[in-house]
Length: 395
Image (cartoon, rainbow, N blue to C red):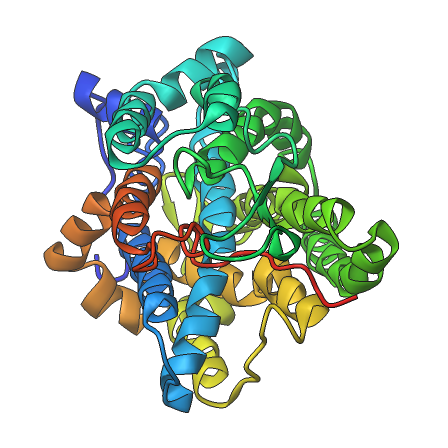
């Protein structure tokens, strides 16, 4: 039937493995609808982030539109956290009641890491040979091997080559071995807390679910106070620690992940009945992709250029949850599949394949290896490894 996605009737061992990896193919014994169009939204977010990094690594002035693409493309990091919360919660919430959240925390995390972790270790091995390693690298390696680097605000001091010692800068340390590995580390912590949170969210009413989503979005506004907090922390170590804590560690995105869990509950309450989608789904979700991507394009064309150095508070609001409403429209619109963009573009075989190729954690690790090897300055300076280095502000 047009507008509905095919329901998977049986769960093979291979599909169970894909579900364990977090792939957006919840093929389940309960007969919950498949959400294939979501794969393409992941690919679009991945490409936007990669493009933002590439633009940032190109020296010189850039046309206004290119600058806008760099700024707003980098805001899609939060999308992966919200999407992960949505997909994993959807998988559990749509199981038969007796099978919901049946795994222990250890087994649940083990399934999530079963194929991602070997790829991550492979990326670590590559960087061992690609870059010179100092004592600090080897001291922090255990944290990276255990995926704990995003649980703590690691920072280190570096003197760029050819500069005086007083020109030292403080740099986030969560990516010393893999520039984007902090993302997987943070996601690991969120996987641990997901079952207990999702169990409670699953019992919320429609009003309670909407209230939770609004609360998560409103929480993003606290980042307006970060410039003040960094000033209180002081220039140098305190400033860098504050920056790292909210940009490269778990406190900066936990509300976005919870918003994804709430979005799954909202989607189930308003769009699913029995084993299929309801015909009276919210009109906002029936056109969610068109509206969500339309709003994003408007931001790219006419939105402000939020620079990390000059508009830090507003920058962090937009980067860490400010786009939750837009992401909610895109996720639920793609999941429902009735949206014209989802039906005639995102759900086509080409985009489905691209989406599966760009499975979040794998692609981010691969992109990290590429960026780590290519984004070094010609003089060998470490400044551009993460393409977004924190510099001390003038005293």
